[in-house]
Length: 78
Image (cartoon, rainbow, N blue to C red; front, side, top):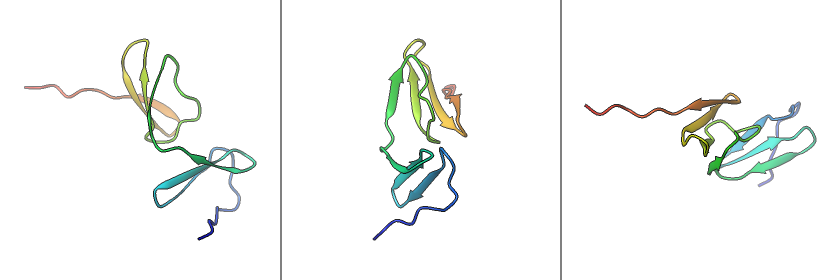
């Protein structure tokens, strides 16, 4: 089955069909690799919503939402 990417896409638009996603780079659609947890001392550039990143400088975990990195917190045990 051929894919039918949306017309009028702008850079960083994401298209998902089934379990696969593609990001438009301004010229062509590129397949997004399955989610993985990134470990680095700097945040990944142009993250996909839901992407996970562990900051190796402080050990904190973040997730991506609307191109922002939001720190995950732990629940308090009572």
